[in-house]
Length: 302
Image (cartoon, rainbow, N blue to C red):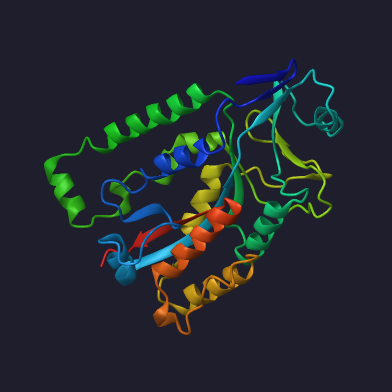
């Protein structure tokens, strides 16, 4: 970690590292038979061999959105306003309080407002995600070590069992989301709080990712970890790509995103829906607001 002042620190890795680590980790879900898996839906081209064809026929999507942050920290000895507020509210501060600041553009909390609007149309499926690691080497080593361990266990399979997997056996023979323990070392916070005053605001939490506070005056309910949140989304099962539910959700999401209705189109009927529309929507969110669109993809056993 980097020292800013004697009692203030910041993580020693860029924010862009977080989505790389999360995606590498989530790509393990469903291996080796891939009946349920996680896919970033922002650069996939229509007609991509294998994935798109199968999704069209069998797949169900559970879309969700993440804005990645990197952590900063104040020692419990700090005299900062953030630490004073946590002390006043009797929130854990030792050995330090972690936090991240809302992104600002031209003095406004534009990104946070967009996330709130997105959350309104996708309840429970939009969140800030921030690691609890301040040290880059520890973060990378932790993900790598556990990924190696999980993969070694997953592929110690007999030839006969692997044959059954290739025929489409149940998801119990795959790497499960709940096996990814390092996801518990990421805080997940839904962007419900009002930051329309355009002041500088932070979300703070303790070293375990608990005891959260929005520094605009509100406690943050629900201490779900990233893994617990993702398990809830996975359980929702989602919807077929070419369905009225898919079209309605796409239309509602599109209308919640400022600036995209002029560049993205809405299909006339559910049968016209394709992965291309969702992918272009994800691409716009990523390029304009640095918001990542993902989906749990459920393939039927039929």
